[in-house]
Length: 73
Ligand SMILES: [Zn+2]
Image (tube, rainbow, N blue to C red; front, side, top):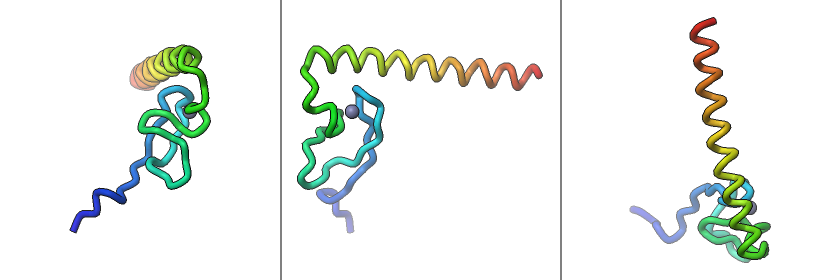
């Protein structure tokens, strides 16, 4: 038995990186943006999304560098 309509998966906001649940009754959140960022003007949100993507990339690079540093001692 699958109840697909009521499945709530944790989502990550594209703009601020916050983890949120979607869909939530009474919440304005969309598939890609949390409640807080839904109200942000489009242009500003695009800038936030770019920065958020960049931060994610940098975080991944740090992880790789850390792994390398650990491996080589
Ligand atoms: Zn957000």
